[in-house]
Amino acid sequence: MSLLAKATESVAYIQSRLPAELQKPKVAVICGSGLQNLASALDPSPLVEIPFADIPHFPVTTVVGHAGKLVFGFFGPKKVPALCMVGRIHFYEGNPFDVSVFPIRVFKVLGIDTMVVTNAAGGLNPAYKVGDLMVLSDHINLPGLAGWHPLRGPNEADFGTRFPPLSDAYDLDLRQRFFAAAGALKLARPIHEGVYAFVSGPTYETRAESRMLKMLGADCVGMSTVPEIIIARHSGVRILAVSLVTNEVVTAPTPKVSDGPADIGAGAANHEEVLEAAREAGNDMKDLVLHVVGGL
Image (tube, rainbow, N blue to C red):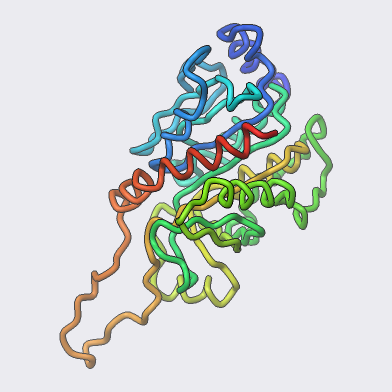
C-alpha cells in the first residue's frame, strides 16, 4: 500500500469521528514534552479527542509525558479549525523515520497548511536560561548529515519534490506574528531566535558533544522537531517552531583527577526537570499559540 493510500485511510477514520465543521482543520499544533497544556487553548465545544492507537496505520508514542492523542477544536474568536497532537513519535523509540513522521503526512491529507511545532530543548547559548523561549530560524540535522534522513529512499512524489529546499523552512511571517503576539500579551519571559540542533537521543549529550554543537552554531539542542519540519516542508506546509529551554546544557570540560574533588554530576539533565520547566511555562506558551493561530 502506498504512503498516500495509508494516510488517506487514516484521514477517513479521523473524519468519521469528527463533526462536519472540524473535518478540514487548517492548523496543526504539535505539543512537546510537558506542553500538553497547549490543547487547553482550544474552545471547549466542540472538542474531539482521538487516541493514536485508534487510528489506522498511526504510530503510538511510548514516552512519559506524551499522552498520545489528537485533539480537534477551534482556536480563538475567528474559530480557526485546528488539531493538537498531544505527544509525538521519536526516532529514538525505535521507529524508522517513515513511521515517526507519518502523522505529518496524515495532516497534509487532512488539509493542514500551517503547523506549529513545540519542543523542550537544552540551552547551549550561554545567554539562554531555563524558561526562555527560542523561535527556530534554522536547524542543524546531525543524523541527516550522517545519512539518517526522513526523506531517504524513493521520493513520495504524491507529496513533494525529490530535492526540497530548506533555506526557507521557518516561515518569516509566522515568526513575526509570534513576536508580535508576545508584545501584545506583554510577556516578561525572554524570547530568542536561533538555531536548533537535532540529535537522535535518547541520551543527553556529553560535555564534548555539547561544545562541538556550540562551535557549529547551535543555540539549543533536542531530540525531535527537525524530522517533522522536513516532512512538512516536503509537503508544502508552513512552519512555526518554538523551543522551550528546560535545562542549561553542561559544556565545561569533565573534571580530571588532577583537579581534585569535584561534583561531576552537577548540572546533569534529567527528564523530570524537563517536564517541570515545561509545566511552569505552559500558560505563556498556550497564550502565545492561541494568539498566533487564532489570528490566522
